[in-house]
Amino acid sequence: MLYTPPKNDEKRRPRVLALANQKGGVGKTTTAINLGTALAATHKSVLIIDLDPQGNASTGMGLEADGRTVTTYEVLIGEETLKGAAMETAVPGLYVVPATRELSGAEIELIDVDRREHRLADAVASLDGDWDYVLIDCPPSLGLLTLNALVAADAVFVPLQCEFFALEGLSHLLRTVERVRQSLNQRLEIHGVVLTMFDKRNNICDMVESDVRSHFGDKVYETVIPRNVRISEAPSYGQPAMIYDWRCKGSQAYIHLASEMIRREEQRVAA
Image 1 (cartoon, rainbow, N blue to C red):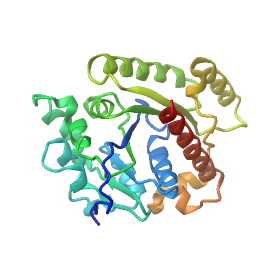
Image 2: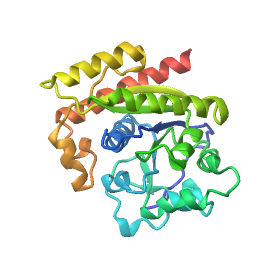
Image 3: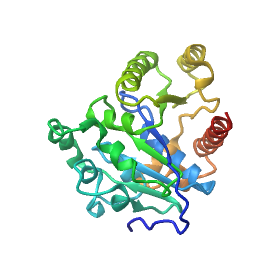
Image 4: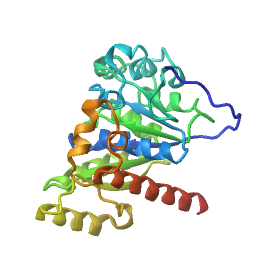
């Protein structure tokens, strides 16, 4: 079902967060899906923009491939608006702009287009009053699609897997964020880093956590997402882990992460 505008007429700019990390398999999509679900559970209206040609966020929210008639591809090439592409999910208040493999061609098609880095930002600018949060699930690369997300976003939310090369990958992303801030989006900041796939039995996880917290301090969320079988199973059923099994440790961790994020947002607004 396509998006139905809210009844209230209050106009406000949504808070736009890009979930980015150029490494694959670090939990970007899982975090987008479950963080979005947790925020919706607190009566926040949430839009997930699936900007990965693999379309995993769309699949993970139960959107069948043959039902994705309007996607982020049409949004980026200017044939559709985000509101026109947004699809309702089984989670009340949570919508998804889906993606298909066709999106991979957008990077080539936009090469010679004016303001190619601003295509998504221009689309997001029309969303006043529609959602509280927009979460952009980026592809595992720092190409034009991710660049569009960074230009459109207020802040970057970084899922970071607890593995040996984690800090090296993070340093590349931070350099990219700084370049974007200097040349394309002055308001862009790092919202926070969340450690994912944490296994307390693995000494490497403790070492990575210690290193990341010593380098980035308060930017690192206190909440840590554990490695959890139920989180891995949920996408195959087209459900967020919080719907599939809200009692599991992974779901509970995402509930705590959403609470911590909301507190940070309240502190930011108060400041």
